Image (cartoon, rainbow, N blue to C red):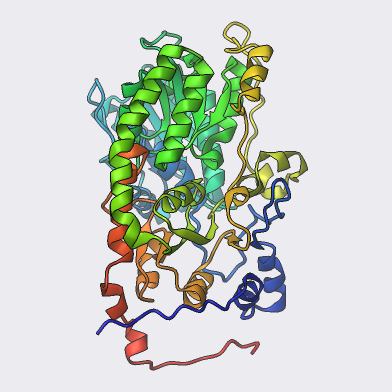
Amino acid sequence: MAIAKKKLVQWEPTDIKKELLSKYPAKVARKRAKQIMINEALENATPEITANVRTIPGIITMRGCTYAGCKGVIMGPTRDSLNLVHGPIGCSFYAWLTRRNQTDPGPDGANYMPYCFSTDMQDSDIIFGGEKKLAQAIQECYDLFHPVLISVFATCPVGLIGDDIHTVCRNMKEKLGDCNVFAFSCEGYKGVSQSAGHHIANNGIFTHIVGENDEVKPGEYKINLLGEYNIGGDGFEIDALLRKCGITTISTFSGNSSYDQFASCHTADLSCVMCHRSINYVADMLETKYGIPWIKVNFIGAKATAKSLRKIAQYFGDQKLIDRVEEVIAGEMVAVEAAQKDVLPRTQGKTAMLFVGGSRAHHYQELFAEIGMKTLAAGYEFAHRDDYEGRRVLPTLKVDADSRNIEEIEVEPDSTRYNPRKTEAELKMLDEKGIKFKEYEGMMTEMEAGTLAIDDLNQYEAEKLVELLKPDIFCAGIKEKFSIQKLGIPMKQLHSYDSHGPYAAFKGAVNFYYEIDRLVNSKVWGYLKAPWQESPELSATYVWE
């Protein structure tokens, strides 16, 4: 017989926060208290949360490292970039095909994503240095594949022994001639989280590739899609929808991307930012150097997708495009509304928790709301304060030592190619119509009052939240998946979607509705007991208790 879940509805947000902190030593509790916020967002009075600070030693964080963000998240989805990891083989394997980034081979057939390239450093390389081995590996990669780009990634031991990977790459680029070669100093320890790796990777792309190809690509209404990584085929779904509307995607950073897309992105007329944290500074640099304005979009959720398409159409201001977008939205919403009507009786009133990287903990709340589900708590793994509170807090942010580890590129208007796509008067007129440029409201401003926003959630807090609030579904990453399931709660990976997806755009929304319906209404979780619940053998207390 299934075990009914007992919901503890008497818990107030303040009690939950107090309970989460109760097991910590006093000093740790004071630090974590600043990262656990009871949302009281009303208009512009968003409470201040501490974010982008190092994880407290001893806490089992859900974060990734700087290397993972650089190699795995940003450069990993680029199909014709041969990614060579300079370090032990374990680091390379860790960042190989772990996120289900999908790709098509492109017109030239080049696709190196199925391969795992590493210099496989041994003890002797750590002692005597690995520069010669790196140069040899670059030459071998070139001889075998003749790629247009070889990207080299530093791992922790490389930073510790001081291999000059940048000089090696410059020398090899000069030697090879027709292959770009450059490196990323993205040692895992270098930043607070994988967010530092995103910044390092994007800086490298902007410095070494962007602007190389001035060729004007065919098509109308040209945009860059920034912060979309084609997990589970999301990017395919978005591209198909944009093509249906008549919108041309010049580049995607960096799902199903190519070297030429990066090299040509400065020819677009608008940048659309999906994941704010992973790439907002690239949008800023493209505007400063080439005059391309940017807006925040969201293709997760049917309503959000429709809103984003309308924003793009209004920006270009062509009635033909505006009418076409409305026609596409009307056609796509038929299936969306039918799916909503089908699942709503079974999902209405259910609850969810989301602790996911990028903007996903924000975006997916809209999808859950579309099928009547409420988000009880949410947070990011690697956010900064502006991801929670909106970009209006940027002037008040302090640059700390960790942030100074990341090179800031000084960008100025290009002497020949700077071309503002809109005049100041046109931008002002669009702003008055509700098209906000360089703006992101943040996650907390759109969450209900009394919900919890938690930065850098850890294993203990995740299990405690589940124990206290008994959500109907918990969304996070692979590190949390099985521990949550053992508590009898369905767990949905929103980092790599398990084996499902796509969940973007209108068709993706329908997929998501039915996937969540299946998960929250499955009876199997009520039968589940972890081994230690069946036969507990060990018990202990904390030393300070």
